[in-house]
Length: 123
Image (cartoon, rainbow, N blue to C red; front, side):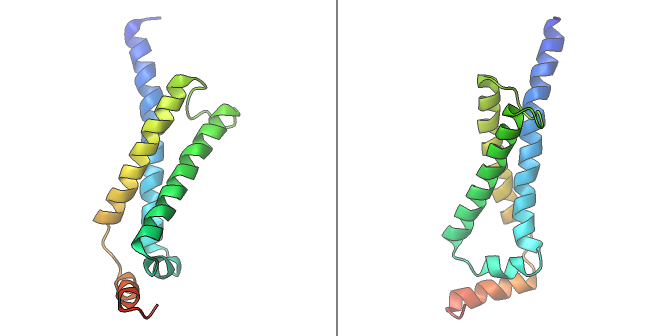
């Protein structure tokens, strides 16, 4: 196989899962910030619990991608050490995009009110 084609395949096999799971991490964060009803409930949670919840959800998404790949349902990564390495990199990328989306997304007024209520000890 041509070395350039080999490098192109390697880049495609690494960047596709990284991009897919990074977008998924950001979507999870945006869902918690903008989904009506859920966003107010979520905003009232303690910051540590919210962070842990995001960590668990993103980790489950990455593990699901690995399981789907290993069972040949949806081939996201290869079934070797490279695939495990890609999943670890994708997990880090998904957590990074998740937190970046949370910090950069503006908070709706209802979320600000729920946070103020939580901080005042009313919720």
